[in-house]
Length: 91
Image (tube, rainbow, N blue to C red):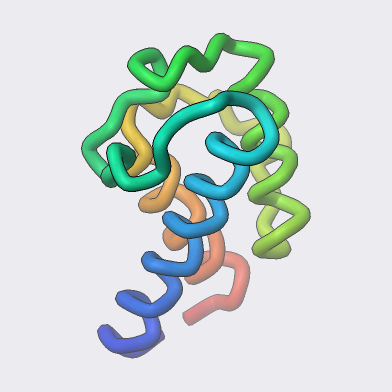
């Protein structure tokens, strides 16, 4: 992936996470969410994290099966999706 594609993909993943957090699970103001926001500060628990990882798998065609999800911030999850995407595309 080129740097531009990674930046665009990063924004796409962030937008997806924000839409899930604000629209599906919690009544949170989307403008207050950044890559540095923690999942705990958004009120998410371990079950929410499992659901989020499955949504990200489906949305971005990556596979987190067998991987321990230990994301603290949105940045952690975005970096994981990008790394998986790059690895699975053998780029």
